[in-house]
Picture 1 (cartoon, helix red, strand yellow):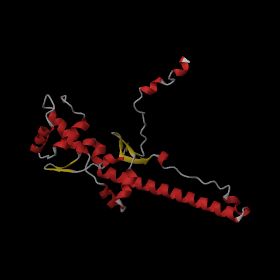
Picture 2 (cartoon, rainbow, N blue to C red; picture 1 turned 90 degrees about the vertical axis):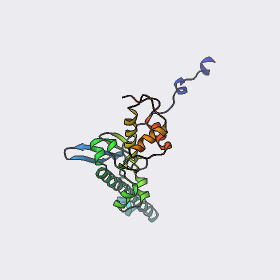
Picture 3 (cartoon, rainbow, N blue to C red; picture 1 turned 90 degrees about the horizontal axis):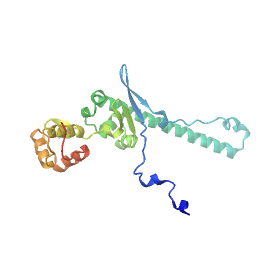
Picture 4 (tube, rainbow, N blue to C red; picture 1 turned 45 degrees about the horizontal axis):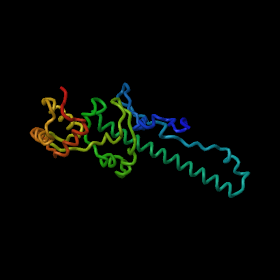
Length: 219
């Protein structure tokens, strides 16, 4: 009776979240001529249609022949959709590589603002097509594996030109290295404004939270 009352999986009570492995859809890899692009074949499969039934169509009745031919057409359309999806992703990856070359050479702080609309116009497709294509997709790069959305940072206009959120966060960290404790978000916003970066206090607070800044920045 005691054994039946016990929990056979006691660790389940302390498990907080499951570990999920991120598998990249696109791989940007270094080669002698620069950065190459490859698509993960796991996400771009091919549907193979065996010829067993097609070879025996002459021996089958009309309803069966009609059914088989219909399924073969569906399989061909399925493969066509996969090829279109693959081509769209490859084209998007090529544009990302050309527009964000500084990122691949130097890292996140050198990412340039890029809008989905710009990519859509270059590919002559609707913006929603690009949005769906990168949704939930990941890319493996020389600097790590990231969501495809990271290549489309918003542009924040400042007196220093258009900056990405990552570049502004870097400037916040540099600013706080000269202080023992983190000042109020309003003070940080005022100091950034002196350098030509005008941000709302709430935006500064958001960036500080994303950076994990609490009381002190180590030098």
